[in-house]
Length: 322
Length: 284
Image 1 (cartoon, rainbow over the protein chains, first blue to last red):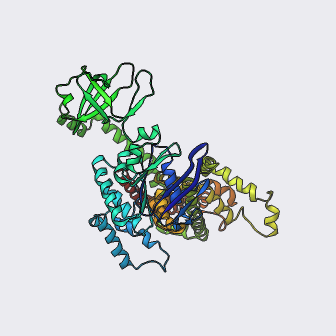
Image 2: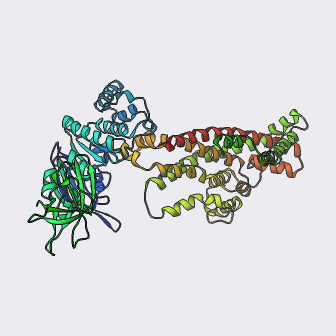
Image 3: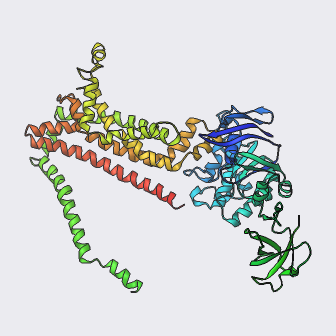
C-alpha cells in the first residue's frame, strides 16, 4: 500500500515541527526518515499513524485520504521506541491483543488466535517466550515481541520509531539485518525513524533526510551519500572534512576520499601528523594543515605504504580525491 | 579495618542502638497500645453483656447503619471521581491543569469543620438554594444527604492522589499502542489502563474507606445530631461520652476500632501488592 504525504504542516505552540512536507512512499518500500533529534521525523511518523493530527495537509493511503480516519481505522502497525508492551500481560497475550480487540463478528476463535500468535512468535524466533512477562525479556526480545504484536492485525503499513535506538551496538546490528530480511519476506510498506545514518544506509531502500522540520533530500542510500543535495546532508551522512587552500572555496571530502604520500608531490598538501589510530581494517590519521584550525581526518587501509613507521609530529602529504 | 570486623560491628548493636529501640517500644506502648487497651478495657469493664447491649441498642445500630451507608455511597463515587480526575490530569494536556490538581488536594488543606460549614451555607435554611429545596420538600443539611456530601468532600483526594503519580510515570504509550491495535476507548481502559493501576486504586479506596468511617468534623457540622436519624458512629460515641455513659461510649468505640482494623489489614495487603508492582518496574 502506498503512502502519500501532502503539504503537511505541524506546530507545537511556537515551534514549527514540520514545514510543507511532501513525500511519496511506494507500495512495499522500506523507507528511513533520517535526521538529528528535533528534526520532526517522529512527529511525521506519528502523523502518518494518526497519533497526531497535522495543522494542514493530508495523508493518503493507496489513493484513499485517511486524514480524518481515527488511529484504529488506519490499519497501521506501529512499533514504539520503548516498545510499549503491555506490562501486565504475557508475551502471548500481548501478541494476541489486537486480534482479541476486534468486533465480535470479525474476531477469530481463541484456537485460531493461538495458532496465529504462535506463527508470529515463530516468525520472530521467540515462541519459547510465550508465557513470560515483558519485564523478564531483554531489550532485543522486547523489540521483536513488539514487532510480532504489530504484525498480528495484518497491517498494510508498518511504522517503527527508532526501532533499534535503545539497544546495545551488537544486538542493534543483528536486529537491523534481521529486520531487513523480514521486510523482504513480508513485504509491507515500512517507514522507520532513525538518527543513525549507518542504520538508514544499511536497512532502507530509500532515505528521507530531514532537518529542522523540512525534507533536505530523498533518495537511495547511494544517491544521498554520493550526491548530497546540501551541505547538511553531506555532513549528516558521514564524517566530512572541510579544506580550503589560499582562501579559495572550501572543498568537502570524506576521510577515505584521500591520497596520502610521505614525500612532497605536486597537487598534494602538507599536514602535520597529530594522531594515528588503528580502527580494524583502516587506520585514521589526523592531520593539521597550515592556515586552518579544523583538523583533517584521513582514513586509509592499515597496510597503506605511507603508514610504514609513521610517527606523530612527522609531515604527511595528502590530496583530496574530489 | 577488615571487612569481617566491620560486618561484626554492625551485627553487634551498640548501647545507643539498644536504647533507641527500647525508647521506640516505650513510645509505641504509651501512645498506641495503652490507649487501645484503655478503650477495650473500659468498653468491657462491666462484662460482655453490657458491651453487647450498648452496641445493639437501636440508636447504636442506626449509627452503625448510617456510617456504613455514608461509606458505601461516598467510596464508590470517589473511586469513579478519583479515577476520572487522575485520567484527565495525567493523559491530557490542557489549560488550568495545575489549578485542577490543586483543587483536588483542597479537602486535605481545608479544616473539616469549614468543609461542613460550606454545606450548611450552601444548603441550609438561609442559603441560596433554600427556596428551591423547600419548594421540592428536600432536606440536605441535618439529614443523610448532607452527611454523605460532607463525607465525599473530605475523602475526595485519596483515590486521585494515589493514582496521579503512578499514571504520570506510566505515560500514554501503552494506551496509544492499544488504540493502534484496534481497541476502542472502553477496551483500552478496561484491558490496559485499569490493570496498570489496579493496586494503587485498591490502596486509594482502602484509605478512602478508613477516612469515610472515621470522619467526625465535617459530618458533625452538617448532621444536627438527631439520635437514631443523623448520628454516625463517631458522633454517637461523642454523645454517649458527653452524657457520662462511659461504658457505652467505649463499647461503640471498640466496634469502630474493629472496623478500622479490618480496613488496616486490607491496606497492608494492597500496599504489599503495590510495592511489588513498583519493585518489578524499578528492576528495569
